[in-house]
Length: 482
Image 1 (cartoon, rainbow, N blue to C red):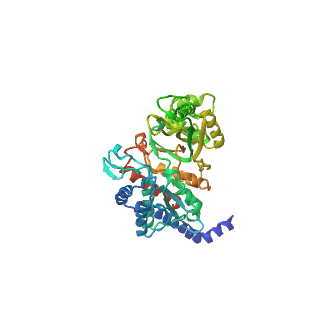
Image 2 (cartoon, rainbow, N blue to C red):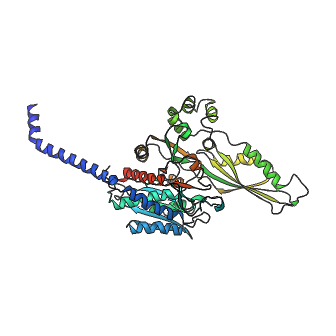
């Protein structure tokens, strides 16, 4: 024992010096991490971002035709001025994708901040403000794309600028991708990039649209961030039926309009049965303790006989929740006839079907044909459903999401979620890349209803909090010192 103590004494100066070096190194690391956030003038960043946001929104990138060239050139010019490397890729005339990069260590795959520049059509006469005017009133910016999805692009842009300006040392590179054509299925946008230019992106993780913070969601007090780890699969169908044309003054049962209407009535009255997926069950089980009884008990035991039906009549009664509990069939388009006194020979319909993960697409189509019944029906795919695995709800990226949401949003919780709508994330998930739908903004049901509707808008406060959270999330996952 005495000999050991003597040895310790002999090496004590070296041990003390080593410990001091470790402590100094740790302090330096903490100091470097602190500098990545505390030295940023967020008021200046927010003011700059608001100008960029409003200008970006004024580019009419309606899909069709999804001409994003001018909008992408605008974003590229901002990044180029800052010395951030950029590339553009054109799938079709006007359909341009932007990729910007801040490199990290060689051999380490980057984090991708992903968004799309195209927007859905508008009927300007129905809007309070011009849909491409980006007016600012009552603390909101009003424009098509304000939520879906140009704000997310600006959050990524400002994160890239802040990283570059502050010289943040990275242990993982950061890249930003802005795509066209998302609103038409992504074939000439993200899907095209994955197929033709995977070597230009190849991320470790991706953050995209698909989830946000909802106040008092399903009766839970506070903010719940539904972070998308999966999505229902887009299954768009064109249905047509042939019948006997003739004079409109003579009603007959072989009128194709009548055949189609009766068939669609049968189809829509008998939606597919409820099926609870693992993702949905996990999400409900995680929020069950926050619900009052009996909802708390129902959500924790959805697998029990009759429990799903009880919850569906109560806490799970909202339509957007019901749509996640079954495959769905929605009638969105009807087309027939050209003159009021002429019976047409063909009647057509468009069906927006969304399939849960695990649904057999061929079996679904067979069931649909059977429900349409007798008649000279033709069914063609407008878009076939994709298969992509869900992103994990554990590990580096998921843990970072939970940390940043807890830090940046008071009393907020995170639940894994599945979206009813499709996003570009599915193309990355199919390549094995964990992709998460998260726009770090707080949007109530009234704001969400404006997406793809009239008077879409985003508050300036939401834009600012989204920029800060996106930056913090990037720092958590990518900064060399944390």
